[in-house]
Length: 313
Image (cartoon, rainbow, N blue to C red; front, side, top):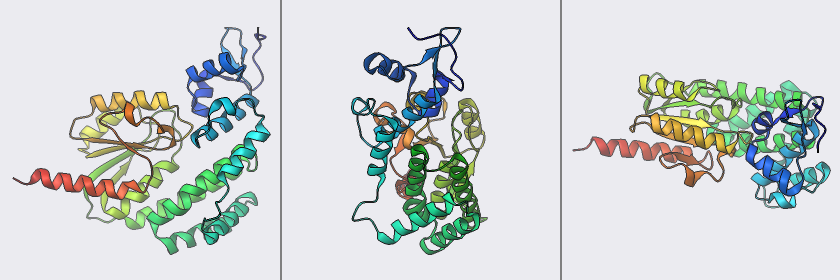
């Protein structure tokens, strides 16, 4: 039996669920079936996980997101898991060499803390590609590359934050230049659920919507479900869009979206996307799940077509 001593820096199971996106039930099943993770117990008999186990769980979750099965991963050490992640994330032979070079240069600027060089490189790519292509062709894959580098220990937390802040600043400026005084329907409200602290996903969605001329309002992150419903109803929004990062537990996302769909007026569409929702499509009737950001312009066009058809006699 585990020693009932709280490990220094250890996390309770609820915090591990939030941090890794792995459900509590999954962690317990793996403990019984595979012998990992193997938490200690605190003075109340509750599970407590060491930082090393949490780090390994993050790697496993990322690899599962890329299609691998947990039974083949849990017995591997963190170094082997990191190598797998690096191999899966490596550019394919048919990738654009120019884009690969851009990614390598940007990672170099991040590692060396070259703030101005990083900002300039991102800004030049934005101007060359346009906002939507910049999001789908540069920011989305870079997020995975930077995230994987952080999981492997190739980037420090401060360096990951440097990248995120620079991208967010550039996107906010770009979005503001797309905003005009004459915005068209639909009116879209953006937010995240409580405990979802990743704001970059919201900005990326807003950056895909802004060039389409729709009215987009962000409530920011961590909005309670009841507050989302109240704001959507009072503001007469057409669409509520919610973003989930890979660290957000799918079980909590599904439960929250079901609750929100049940309380939202039928005339308000509910959209959701992000890595945290992979594999949940069949569990969420009445919620439009997006697999990629590229789907957003087409979905807006479909909404407008349906709205126009509903007005015709």
